[in-house]
View 1: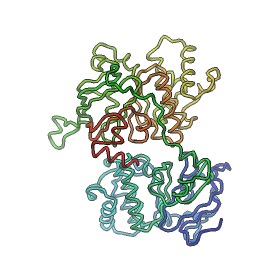
View 2: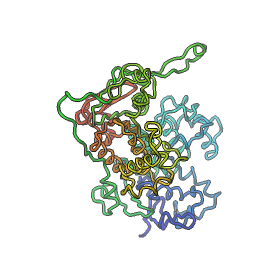
View 3: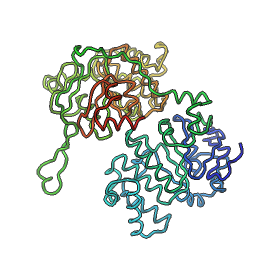
View 4: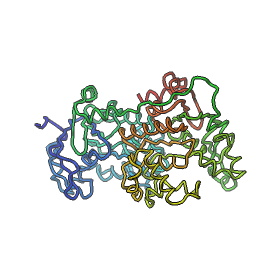
Length: 538
């Protein structure tokens, strides 16, 4: 393949290995000035390590090949020469701004440091330029936000600050590594639009690293698809999405969640809800400024006057942006937060259960699957200990062989093992020995082993790749059909709601704005905010 004329970056035969074991196998790609190229693939495909290896930012990586940036080979530069390229010619936006930003310095100080080191500005000049950069990214009150620490900003504001820092030296190429993964669907759209506007204004090229095909369709000019360290297909977004030539590309494009549910009965009568709330209110104490804070606390209302009904064997989807109150609603449903109003599980009110000593029995009826399976599973416990922990609490009379038999059966139920008779090999493994999808199946098995009637699913697939997400959702649908489980599904992903939910509840700023059957709400939304969410996911 001959090198394209006037390419800003031309990569040929890029190979990355660790300890002699290759993880990227001689890939070729190029980016023109002002072009937007998306590097797409699942976790472990090699897309991030390929991009970061260009600037030799991957520890202990053995990198070979050529990477010509306007004729200069990045892979043959000394460390001193690369320091002049990093930030000046090539800048990076990392996936998680909270971990990429220094928590001990204000956002303004961190951006100003780049301007002083790279542009030679004085402290006063850097401060003024920092405010201008923040303003260009659309952050409200940029002068005040410049004095804020990262934890004092929202997720979208932190990502905008990262973009401002990356643009400080006016780079020719921007590497954007999953820049919207941690953001809500509407914020994702805002950040993409911002990047597109800034890219046009500055004439930058952008290398977008992502597994989100909706982002690629909306943002990129060309796409390059990676599988297990090989670049299997590349071309314009229009051509690749319309007629993918490689089976792996076709598999990615076909990984949209599918709806395979037992549909809700049409009549409105029916069974007593397994989860019900009326006028639910959840608030937190907050400090008051000045002397008033010495004597009393203020109040932040996270959920205000929410009503909900979850019938047996159905899924109630709760959708909204971060800060809308949906996770607080889920924690209250689990009996983990004090609340006002009525909140009952299988007909028993949480406060009544606490008074008569039946809260533990009630907890057996409602279990939870958290967003990130890696952080929700103890790294010090084996599979047998993790999955069987609930039995120690709720069925303490079980003998060890009986408990082990139940654990193996639960692993078989979630598809981790095919033959329960061969399950012993899995029991002594630890969470780090499993993939993300396998860890989420472990989390589901842990929740199911005590025989609940309700599962609270808190963003159960947002940390997973599209193909793994589809598999986990199919598993949850199968379990619901077979066991008659009811799900309270918390998510900001409209596609997941469309595939999983029977009814949907839309939240913003702690209030329920709209609720009803999923088709009615998503196809004909009555509230402007719901329309915004649906349009942002299109």
